[in-house]
Amino acid sequence: MSRKPTTTGRTRAAQPFNETDYRDALMRAGMSEEDAASLARRTAEARKASADAAAPASELLGLPSPADEAAFESGAAAGSAPAKKLARTAKEKPIRAVFDYRNGKIPERVRDLIEAHLAIEREDAKSAGTLGFMTRALAIATLPHRRQDEYRFVRKNGDFVLTMMTAHPEGLPFGTVPRMLLTWVCTEAVQTGERVLHLGNSLAEYLDELGMHSSGGKRGDITRLKHAMTTLFSAVISCHYEGADSWALSNVLLADRVEWWQPQNPEQAGQWQSNLQLSEPFFKECIEHPLPVDVRAMRSLGKSPLALDIYVWLSHRMSYLSRRTTIPWVSLAGQFGAGYAMDEQGLRDFKRAFLRELKHVMVVYPEAKVADSPNGLVLYPSPPHVPFSSTPKQRRLPL
Image (cartoon, rainbow, N blue to C red; front, side):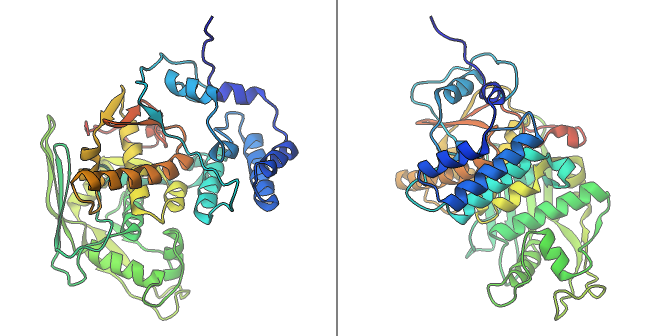
């Protein structure tokens, strides 16, 4: 007789958590005493803070259990009533944030992701003051990942096309800093309702808001921020969607005016006086179609532009997904490609990179139910990472 699947959240909630036993189990699995003690302590704090806690950090370092498989197939979220079973083909492989570091030290990046996961588990973004926003256009199509030789960049996602052009000698914006900068800009626009944004009382304060450091030099964060601001706010962006509810942003500058003054000392307050005036079309796009994100997740993923893009895109897709959907790998490569060749080898390389970064995203967004299949990436209806109740009602695009 078959058993009815039990959601992972209910099973875990019924089991008392023993910090010492958990630490010892991690050490037996090969984790160092320091790492085991740290994860055990943080997991105990998260369990105590919330009766509806998500998966403990141990799930990020072990293999999925049969209960996890059942929960995935049933489509049930942790702590929720069992949902109608979703069909899954035998060739589909659920994707989870599973890492095996029994024979080595946990990398700093994974440690940061786990700490962000535990912080998000303890307190939601709104309560923690880390609620951020991104625009729908830049959730659907993305900025360049690497420096571009050309001064024109095109991204396609179905019926949606994003074109970015510039005449600036530094070229187009690329990498993680412009993405974090855009998140800050959209968040400030939504929260203040103002086109003119003040960039903090000092350069050091503003860098801290972006999760950066007051480091100079050719590769320092001050130089990276200045390059991101000058290239991003010099670029002209066009967005066109040709679906049933067609819309467009044609030849739009993100900002009409940027006042940037860099003091010699990043800590100098009162002399910063840097402001940013958003263009009217971009400001309207920000406040009328905001996509909520958790800034803690963004910062923890901030070493990879692809990981940031996947997190924002997945948050957007899950906000309106109502049925199982398969997205071909060739379509994802066109949307996120980052310079991979559009041939068989290029698609294999892209898929490998995408799945690697998706795994990192799943550490901070474990509620997302996704699977790998020969035909593409399979998405199952899942709760958005940040509830849309945090934002005004908006029209969702079928992308």
